[in-house]
Image (cartoon, rainbow, N blue to C red):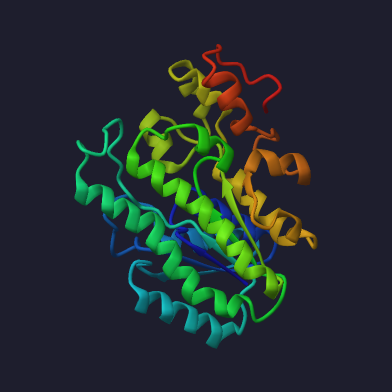
Length: 294
């Protein structure tokens, strides 16, 4: 029994589908439905995600939830309790923020920046507040805080925006704190980052699809290390099935790192290790070459 909060698109959708592939019942939440779009104004919907979960072999249940509204999150968890009586996996992937890149804090829109923090941090805290009492009723629960960048990388690198940098570092720290609070109840909390994610928005930005994404490498050579949302989804599915998942409690993890441990691959059979590639090749100014990195 899983709740993927923020499953409309991107990593959240990939995680929900791969949890479905191992037979999970997955509540998929977000603000965009067939009849209403979020401020992101994108076409992907939670109903589409739920259908993909079904196709993968699980059972997808779409519920429109604004995770900034405590009453809506409380009602969602009450429904899960009423209908199923348990929760084994919570994935906090809520985001949906627009970022002002390459501006210092004093030149950034304060309204935009503070809204970014609310969407990236408050939503995760609100969801954990309501969902964790149900999750800890049975030992072995898993909480995954989805972020961008490992704790090690983010600690040493500015993430191109004051508000984005703060948001992603905060999510890593949330997993660390939750690990301490869940441990006495037999629960595990981790932060997890995909690499260069081929989300729907990223593919649109580069004018390609998942089928021909390599065409973008000619323009953006380091895009060769990118990965599909299924890759991070398979990382979560592997964690959820690991009887020794507690060994990761409080850790900052990446999809590429976990693929080396659990043996899963991306859709093309490769194992892209973006968070090793980025500092060693991209940030180091070396020519794009994924040899040995996927």
